[in-house]
Image (cartoon, rainbow, N blue to C red; front, side, top):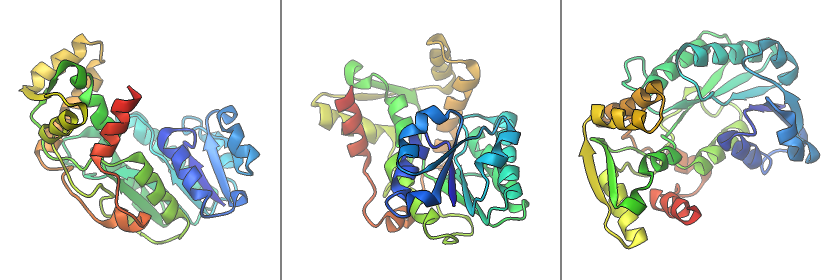
Length: 287
């Protein structure tokens, strides 16, 4: 029994869909906060149980009988994220799972300039000391995050951001396929994986150029200071803590923390990774 948490989310759902092409549905279970959102998976034979990292007692039933548990990391930072991940790890251990998998991040390190990467490093330490074999999926930076920064640049003709560095923006679809491949072949990686990334890293200057080619108009990359960008975000209604996190992404990017481009992801999924131009084209079409 393979248990996937967060299976109604953007990444978790895709992991389950990929997994169902590799293993029988009766070997797949999901732990979700709202089972109603997963009724279609239940109808296909997937075991659906309610589980919430914020309610550790719920995880005993959600993880029952698991041979592997994939913990999809929560969209939180700091102590709250680590508290929830600790509950998930402890729940998986108590359920007797043979292996815990966890969606970490490329560049995870205690000294990272990006708080999420520091949190992931702390979670990986928890995994090392939990007494159960683990695999930490060091996922490349989600390409969807770059699209949030891209904002309305296609309409305004300006991409206004702090100085940045090259980042291996990686598609959710590729990362989901890789997670499913690893789950279907237990033990392929022990400990952290190599960075699971797109084929190459690009900066926002290149993203502006790609967008210009796709839209047929000039999009100018404009560089502002970190503080100016932060104040701009706050003026748009972004909470100060989130604005600080966004600035930290650029500081970490300038330091090269997200610049690795590794072939492991392409090898796992058996094809070339999705290029950022494809991600951008689809996003522009959707808008």
